[in-house]
Image (cartoon, rainbow, N blue to C red; front, side, top):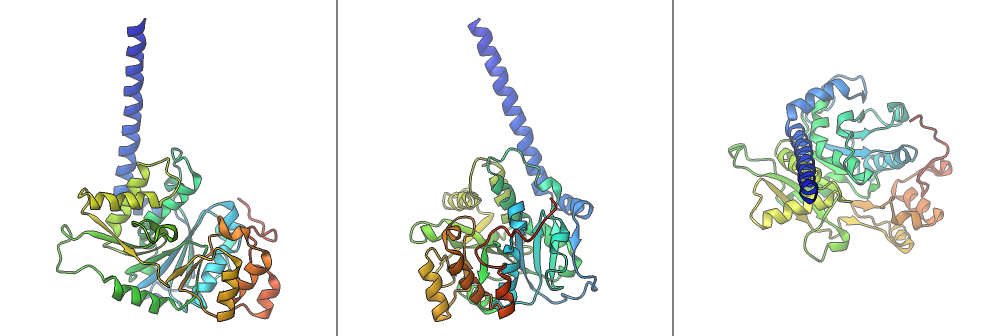
Length: 350
């Protein structure tokens, strides 16, 4: 009887291992096949964009990428806030891509013609083995180049700046990026360098809580090159696939860094950028008041709508956001861009 039970346990273990092997290899095959992903995009992705000719972004080398998933995000004005900050204090008029699972009708007529809204590839979200729903959405960060490729108007874009939708730009984008490029030697790949030998690269700021310790990535903003960052993005995604119980996508980035330090990875180089005065995380209302009074804002203002900012009073948050976004008197009267995370005035068919 005992031997029979042991035999069954061994068979069960083999069966589970085989299932996990098949799932992992299917994912890796899917995630490493850029051509196949692009083919599926053409079939499944729907894009809301201006009917202008494909040369309207001709020569444009920079683009900003935003991701908004979930019903709460679609019923809020977080995306509108982010785009407004990009256009106003950020002074960036180039392409902004919004990837969302909301009906495209939700954003029709909301933005200027240089904002491209698209739905995701359904297969990218059908992942039932991840413990946390939010990680499924965060995984889309690793697909940003695939979605950029889908839009012919973006054929000249070389650099993509990913931003969480709860980040506001508090200063002009281009001078800020140029300073980072100079300080961290952020350059396109050397054309004379072998594509096989040159490592892939991504650029992240250090996380606020760990800025004075060993590197811990803040994935709310990062810089990626259209060609040379692809392998890093794939490695990041594959690390996430292998860590389905992790709560944060940063954990996979940090595992790449650790593997590099241990000599186990030479294909993806993650650069840790110091926070300095580039990015702020208001955690107290007094910080809101001080920035407004001094009219002094960091280039990136991470309001952390998912946790910290929900504790602020409506008045403090609304006043702060109104100043950062440079709202007119008429816009202030609408009370659309303050603390309120879910807007009861907007109904979205899901």
